[in-house]
Image (cartoon, rainbow, N blue to C red; front, side):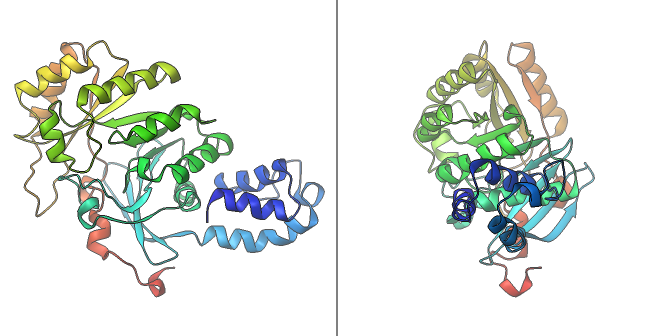
Amino acid sequence: MRVGAIRERLASLGALPEHQARVLRDWVQGAPHERGRRRPADYLPKAVREALPQLDLELASLASVISEHPAKDGSARLLVGLQDGQAVETVLLPRDGVCVSSQVGCAVGCQFCMTGKDGLLRQVSSGEIVAQVVLARVRRPVKKVVFMGMGEPAHNLDNVLEAIELLGVEANIPHKNLVFSTVGDPRAFERLPLGRVKPALALSLHTTKPALRAELLPRAPRLAPAELVEFGERYARLTGYPIQYQWTLLEGVNDGPEELDGIVALLRGKYAILNMIPYNTIPGLAFRRPGWERARAIAAHLHARGVLTKLRDSAGQDVEGGCGQLRARAGRTIPIAALP
């Protein structure tokens, strides 16, 4: 179910745009229809009021929590079941954030990520994306939504941008707190500036070396790191939000002096933040997580050389925090009968 289809359904019942907005606002804010001064009986068309109970049931069934895994850092990983029996991961982040999935699987095939091991299975609809936020809001406040879960958002642009617009307009989430993450698909750079809601942008960099990037991200667009930074800088100046460059720190792969020099050459003086995230170890993969003191020293070194660097820890280290791990452990397809 896409957000656009929900609007069309409401319109067919006589709902004007302001009526549609009210129904969708109640959904994304997790609020009862009876709240506020304008009660449905006085405001919504009769046909819409009569259809609301069934619509509410359908919206509630878009996604359901199969299992919840709290972590010591205040985050919690949710294994979320979809109506067709597939499952995605949603992460409740510390400080009122939620990380949502935009695809079941992923076609990029990053060598250090579990999600891409099975390839892309299907797109997640805009309704299913928003439903993940609604599930999070049942559990805690949500003031930030990051599209950094399973999948490559740029490969599902129509659904992701539709969800972002609804969240940015009706969910009381500041636009800069909606973070679109991508490996650098040119289609994203074309579409994002045109939207009513312009999210913040996070670009997966991971290395300054084109050949190594092609090896680590085998099916990412063949943009050199310098080209990626050029696109990012242009969008940052347009929106007024610094670009967040994501760097998964892999011991012995992208943590050497040559890479650090490359980072300084690329990012010093740019309107940007470098988020350096020590690798979340995945059993069976050859990559290793560097020690925290080593990671701290790298971040301090870059900061001293003029690159704003934030050392971040992937949420949920003690509950299989890497994207795709929870789903892989539970089984790639959840039988329909197992869904709540």
